[in-house]
Amino acid sequence: MQDTKPSGVYGAPPAELAQTPEGATQFSPLIPGSARLEEQPEKSLGEIAVLAPPGTVERRYVIALALRTLAPGGSLTVLAPKDKGGSRIAKELKGFGCEVSETSRRHHRICTVMRPSEPIGTDEAIAEGSPRLDAALGLWTWPGAFSWNRIDPGSALLEQNLPPLSGRGADFGCGIGILARTILASPKVESLALIDIDRRAVEMAARNLDDPRALVRWADLRSGTDLKGLDFVVMNPPFHDGGAEDQSLGQAFIRRAAEALRPGGVLWLVANRHLPYEAVLKSAFKRVTPKTEAAGYKIYEAQK
Image (cartoon, rainbow, N blue to C red; front, side, top):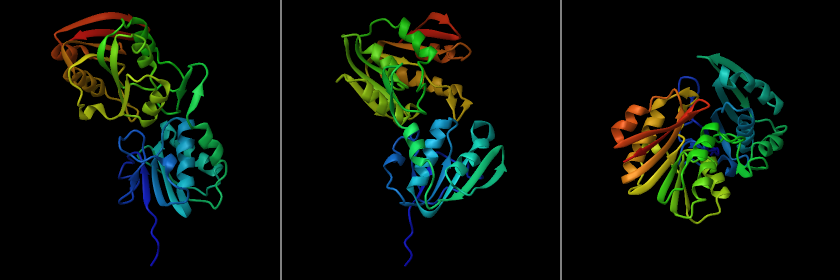
C-alpha cells in the first residue's frame, strides 16, 4: 500500500485559482489556531499550496519553509496577485533550484514546482525571515508582522498623547508590543491583555514585554472576546485585509472595545485621518473627544 503524505496550505488561495488539498493543515500565522510551518518536520508533506505574502523577505521565507517541508518529488503551488509579489515568484522559485510551470489568471501569477532533490539557498532565506532583535527599535521583531522594521507613525503619535493609564486594560491589535511598552510604564496598570491576529506579532510581544501584567493572546477580535469590565482599551486598528482597504475592521475593533469596557471606561484610538470612525464611536460611546490631528492621523478618546 502506497504511503500518502499529508498536505498543507498557507493562507486562503482562491479556490478558482489553486486547489487546496483536501484535509490540508493550515499554516498561516494570520489564521488563529494554525500550525507552525517552522515546526513542520522536513520532507513530511506530499503537497502544499501557498498564497504568497507581498513582502519579499516574508515571501521568500515562506517559500523556503514550504520547500523544506516537502518530501522529494512533492508538489508546491505558489500564487499571488501580480502587483503584490506575483510577478517575482517564478524568479524566486528558480533561484531555489526549482523548475517552474507558470500560468496567469485573474491578475494572479500561479507557479507550480516539484521539490528539487536539493533546494538551493533555503537556509539563507529562512534565516533572513526569522525573528530578530532590531537594534534601532530595541525590540524583537519578525518580518511580516505589522510595522516589523519601523515604529508606525500612528502608534508613535498615540504613544506621545497617551496619559498614564490605570486598572485593567487591553491593547487591541498589539503588534510587537510598542504601545504596550508605554502603557505598562504606568505602575497603576494592573493588567494588560494584548491581542493580535498575527501569531508572529504576539510571540514577539511576549518576548519584548518581560512583565507579569502582560497577557498575550493570539485571536481574531472580529470573532469577539471574553473581556469584560475593562478600565481602558488602546488601539491602532488595521484597515487592510488581504491588501485591500476594509474600514469594517476598525469599526469592529471599536465595537469590541465598547463591549469589553465597564461603564465609564475609556478607549484611546488612533486612525488615519480619512477613515470614517466617528459614527460608530458616537453610537457605541457616551462621550467622544477628538484629541489631536497630525501627520495624517487623528486620535480620539471615547468614554463608555
